[in-house]
Image 1 (cartoon, rainbow, N blue to C red):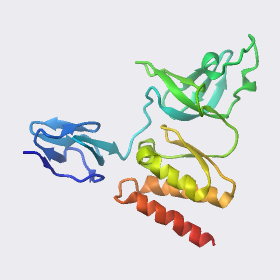
Image 2 (image 1 turned 90 degrees about the vertical axis):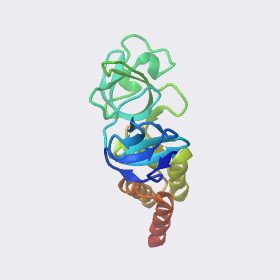
Image 3 (image 1 turned 120 degrees about the vertical axis):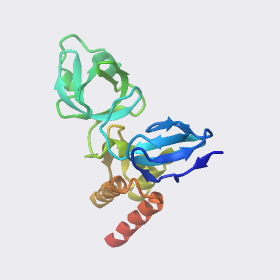
Image 4 (image 1 turned 30 degrees about the vertical axis):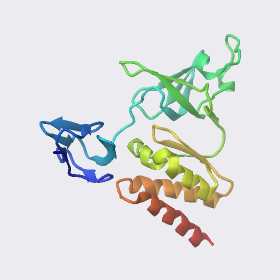
Length: 232
């Protein structure tokens, strides 16, 4: 008989027993030992049907193919750009993956992306040596010309986005800000009013700090409405 010992969104520590029996299946951050499923790391339990997985509370960004990231141009080469995406290795953006326009040989690539520009891009390749290729060809992928860049712990990104985008959608609605969240923990936002931009930033940091707390959606809603009340 299966026995689920933990609750959804509960914070657990390495080695803690999460479930007993064969009905439940271990997923990310968990492992099976005999008849038990245990935690591999400190994290927050997420239950999805029979699957038990953990969202880690700490950790660095590890690139994966199809991740959407926000990066900073740190070098302009002859036929490519090097991009800092918060990983130990720089990512590469080639001419072919940067634009559909024809670019003559020897053209100044800084006319397209220059040093210190921020871009939103997609990871297209990660080799076994952790060499990373990006593309800015695709819907929503582009240079970020205005707005504010902030950084959060990458493993907190799923909580900031929320299930089906619910959390970030609520922040956008309450603040009238455009917001893009990179899987690498870099976030771009742009609003019409500085005080609402600050409210959005404060809400994002509030989620990061309280990512492990149950009832976070209601807490963030109250936070946003309370902040608005203070501004009146």
